[in-house]
Amino acid sequence: MGAVDYFESMWGLALNGQAQGVFFFASLYALVMLLYSLRFQVRVSSLPGVEGELEDERIREFGYAYAMSQKEYVVSVSYKYVVEGKEYVGNRLSPWAFVTNNNARFILKSQLNSICRGSSGKITVYYDPEKPHKSFLIKPGLFGKSVTGLLAIMPLAMYWLKYYS
Image (cartoon, rainbow, N blue to C red; front, side):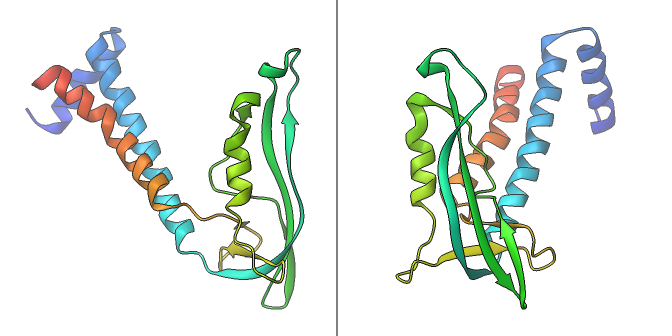
């Protein structure tokens, strides 16, 4: 059976609501999206850096909740940096945006502590040379890229194990 025939048979199963077809396409979707994310992370990892000035960094409430444990939080940053004589203002901390609840605020604090700060109080801003207005304060690390790669292949591996082993 060729690849096209296999896709057609899985499509038929998915249209009929059969678990194998749905699992196959969900796994394929996860693979494509996570590989795209991994590609982006690798690209961001190679961005050059310049010195910048951090104007604001805080953890702020996101949304509304009655109970403290239901509140959600995000990191908010603002910084200035200069590329080829032109000043830019950035607000992206990391390629990964985290929204956490009160119990997991430590993740956001850890992200803020990951900002590369020099002894002069300046920060390192990583910018896209093709689009200098796009920048980050934290580059993706090997651990994050490894997790993304593992998550990309896990659903298809689980599919294979379930239906072909």
